Image (cartoon, rainbow, N blue to C red; front, side):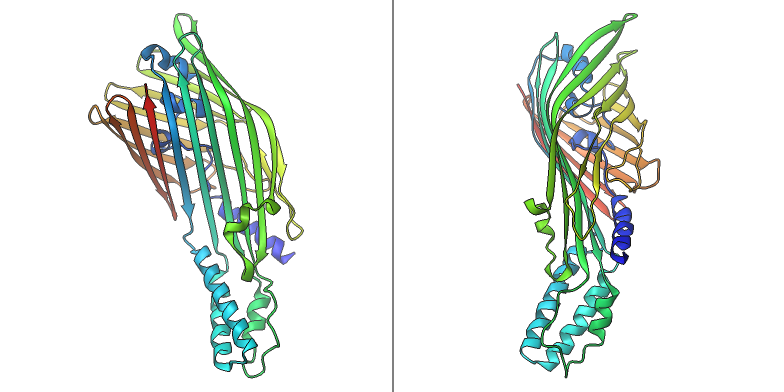
Amino acid sequence: MRSIALLVFSLLFAISSQASQLYFEARSNSMGGTGVASSNREGASFINPALLAIYAPKTNKFSLLLPVVGVELDDSDEMVDKFDSLQDSYDGLESAINGSDTDNIERYRDDLVTDLTSLKGSTASFSAGVGAALVIPTQTVPMAIFYKSYIDGVGVADIAQSDIDILSSLDPSNPPTDIADLDSQGIVLAGAVTDFGVALSFPLSIVNLPVTIGVSPKLQRIDTYHYTANANNFDADDFDDDRYRNDESMFNLDLGVAWQPTDSLTVGLSARNLISNTVTTEEAQGRKFEYRIEPLVTAGVAYDWSRATLTADIDLVDQTRFTDFDSVQFLRVGGEVKATSWLSLRMGYRHDLKDNSVDVYSFGTGFAIGQAFKLDMTGSYGEDAIGAVLQTSYHF
C-alpha cells in the first residue's frame, strides 16, 4: 500500500508537466500551440480541417509536410543519471561482498545509500511525436492525407525507506553472503496515439459570408506502457517492450468550422477525437492505469495583416489522459511577423486554466528557400522543461 500511494502521488506530480495537444507542428508550436484559426495549409489537417477550404482559392500547389519531429523533456531531477549511478553502486557492492573486500563493501554501501536518498521524489517526463501530411489542391473538396503519432509519459523513482535502513545497518566486517534485489522501484507510465486519415473541407456561403466545414475520418491506434522494475534492474529504455505494452485500434473523427467575416479575421472551432475510448495498461506490481481519449473542443481566433498575425486558442473542455489524475485546459496565444519574404519570426505562450501544468513559452523561425522548400524550427521552455520541433515542407 505504501508503494501504491507513493506511486500515485508521484505520478500526479509528474503528469502535471505534460503537454496536451496530441501533435507537433513547428509553426503551431512556436505560436503557443495555436492553430484552430491560424494554421497553415500543411498543418490544418492536424487541428482544424476546415481551414483547407479557406486556403484552396489562394493556391493550386501540392504541399507536402515531411517530416515533422518534436520532443518535450523534463529530467530536472536527473532521475535517469541517478538510476545509472545507483546500479553502479549496487553492482560494486555485490562484487565487494562476493570478494570479501571490506573497504569496498563500506564504500559502495555508503554510495548506494546516498544514491537511494537522492532519488527520493525524483520524476522525469517526456513527450515526442512525428507527423506528415500531403495537401491536394482540389477546389471543390480541398483535402489532405495525414499521419501523426504522439507519445507522452512519466518516470518515477519509488524509493523504499526499508532499503536505506537495511543498507545503513550493514556491517562491512560481517556482510551477508549476497545482496538481494532492492524493494525500491523505477516506474515508467506512457500513452501513445497514432492517427492516419483524410481531411476533407467544404466551402459554404451563409448570408454571403464564407464559412467552411471540415471532417477528418481516421484510423486511430492507442498504445499504453506500464513498466516497473526493481531499482537495481531499472532501465528506462525497456519501457516500450511488448511485455509492458497494451494497444487498441479504432475509428475516430475530427470536425472543424472556420468563418471569415472579413479577409483578415478568421474564427475557428475544432472538435477532435469525437469518439471516446479508454485503454487499460498492463498490470505491474498489482496496479493498473487507464489511458483515456476524450473529445477536445477548442475555439480560436486569428487576425492576419499582410506582414503579421496574432492568434489565440482556448480549450472549451478540460481533458484527462490517465484516469484519477489532474485535468488540464489550455489557453494559448501567439503571433508571427514576416520579417522578409523568406523569414518569419514567431512567439507564443501556453497557460493551463486548471493550474495543473506549467506555463510554457515558445519561439520559432520559418525559412522559405526558393518557392518549393520551407524549413521551420521551434524551441520552448517552461519551469524545468524544454522542447524543440523541426520540420520541412515542399510545395510544387
